[in-house]
Image 1: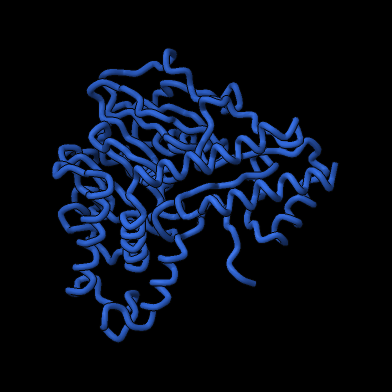
Image 2: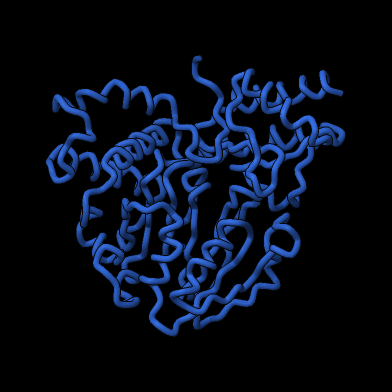
Length: 361
């Protein structure tokens, strides 16, 4: 079977050019006679690659010098707990904005380490829209404010950065980082699992304001302290060398394709095409999310008759459209439109959806 159009929510599609370069270099990376996975992470070749990857990321996002860039492990879920360990002292509280499954999980995982104030939530409405901004109950004395700009399961996304005053804003950007321009200076800490828009799973990217690294947090092992990782250049322990290398290739691919402004336009066009097909299907397909809250990255939808779901999934896979099954919490379908998913893939999906509706009535 040849390459398919991959709509997986994560691990997700990687740019084909990145995969092809990795394939060419797999056995002999950088003239070393060995793969990048067989190199010492403290060797000159690997360190040069790591420095280049960080420089490219800083250029893409215009990351200022007073922010550290860390290449960590553990997945975003580990950092749901590790962030309060680092940013909050015993007895502190933090504000959490709950807009879907992942922000709810982040709040729950933080509870053993601080007092969690759910400053806003749309759970009562099924996470079909973002929490209404005027109802947020923010504490100016909070250690930080945490939110999830894009929810992969429920398909809602913040299309601007919330204003939270002088309290550091912490964002889990696992599913929309690098999908468009971003003002890093609005944030205290940004973290993202790599497996959607950066590279393979097992790597976590973090961008953190350096003054926050000076917070005492709570007693913990060195391996959990972000300041220690920053001081060691993300090499306090052996890093995910393969993930770091592929992330660097992806950053280079983004630069070669016009940077984040071009990527933002491309992602808007893809999402608009798919939502138009859903909304224009006379109810055959439905997306229940409030239009102003809809995600560009993850588009959940249902068929008018759930009895057709199995046929839709079988036929779509046969047509070369991979991983359209919705999350088990919601059912139905979901198409994830990350950076590596081209417009042609969405065009193929929309064409299939129209043909399926015609054939199945």
